[in-house]
Structures are given as structure tokens and as C-alpha cells.
Length: 110
Image: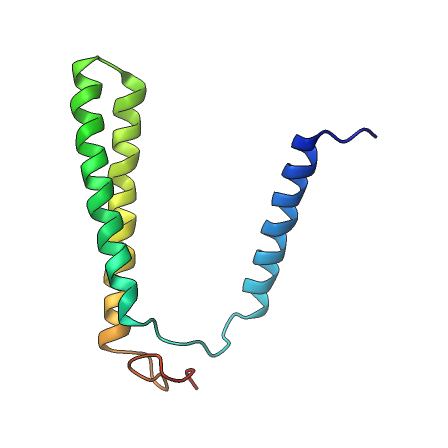
């Protein structure tokens, strides 16, 4: 079989995905750390950046009547909701960590 660079790259991505999945399944229920407070900044930044991009894409998509650009703007809107959901989850974990976790991730959860 003759492997093209694309085949090698795709195979590598699949193998990496399988390794990440196997590690995730192996560590289900294992002790982890509560997130640090610095995780909040990137989530807020992500939501703000996607809001800006979404607004620009909606504006220009309507202006040039591009269904593809409008669809991408809607996709960015869904990304905003995902960032906000992650922000809420991280905030709850920081404010009220699970039992056995240090409030600022100074030590692993028991």
C-alpha cells in the first residue's frame, strides 16, 4: 500500500484521538484538581472574541447575502453558548469545589 502524506497525517490524528479517549476512559473517577481561577479569563475572552466575530459575520453576511457567512455566524453563536456553559461550570467548581478538593487547586482532590 502506498501511503500519501495525507494518509499518514489522518492516521496520526486518528491514533492520537484513540490515545486521548483511552486515557480519558482509564481515568474516569480518578482524583483530579479543581480548576484554578485563571481559567475564567480565557473563557471570557473566547466568548467576547466569538461575539465580535459573530456580529461582523452577521453584518457582512446580510450585506453580501451570503448564506455560508450567515451559517458561520450562527456557528459562532453556538460557540459562545459553549464558552458560557464552560464558564458557569468552572465558576461553580472554583466557588464550591467538590468534597475533598482544595478550593484553589493547591492539592489533588481526595
